[in-house]
Length: 375
Image 1: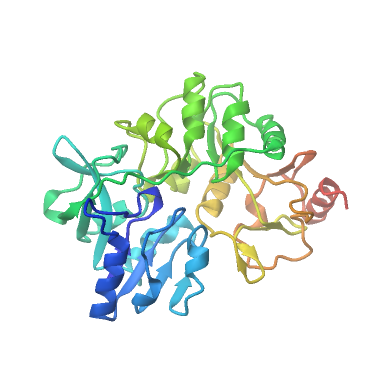
Image 2: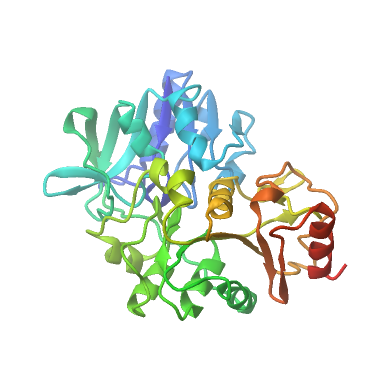
């Protein structure tokens, strides 16, 4: 049997009697034997999750909490872009059941702080075993789940996890360098991390947010009167400020919508702002880690970069400090496979300047990147 576990800030916590749901799942898996567990993105711990209780644990996103869990011999991760998760979960990793947290509104059950790949599983007819959390916001723009597909196992009142990272001076410098390329009214995508908060705080023009992740930074933008329309994302991750703001707003959709390259590459200008662990002299990007050290996963990085590069008025931007912990992100050769090809990177930005790679041939790309990093 294969079990998929709901991910994101809404990963299952404790029941009212104090039972940790993930610990109970692990206990049951150990007793039954032969259970495979599939996990998406875990930015916060899944309390009591003993991965060695399962025959196999497959991660689709190895960053965050997964980095520690991947030390177990029965764990592995699949290097797949987020837009490909649906195909994996419909084929070789198709689960027999999804165990997740749901929110209830007017008698209907909805996904709460994340829709993610779960919507694809529901559309494919995978049964849902759910714990209803009355503290979780209903922020999904997707239809409510059909009651016949859901088996409610119990309740949990812990609410979604909290997570917020404040930007530092270098992120504010990067934000200022990036925002010169972002026109008023554009759709902006930003990745996890403090750069997104810096971008929202320092912009002076109204923006649309079309991203994989929505954070407290969106609330800040709205309060300044600079948020155009409801934003779009598939995960919420922040504090009660975000969750209270999102309650009742149709801002979350499944990955099939949020990471659809055809949709993203049309309409209002689409500006994707992402980062990198390593960049090679041609502009290939690695976001997974350094050598054997896993830092993050591929996620939506190649999806958003490709869509922005395809858009006739879009822009794919990689924003990185010129050095981090005394180390430059520019390396002679990537230490892990390329997460995003050079052809999908338009501009590289540091706190001290930028390299516009559009229309550059390979020799010129090498020259521009080397000059940006002072080589």
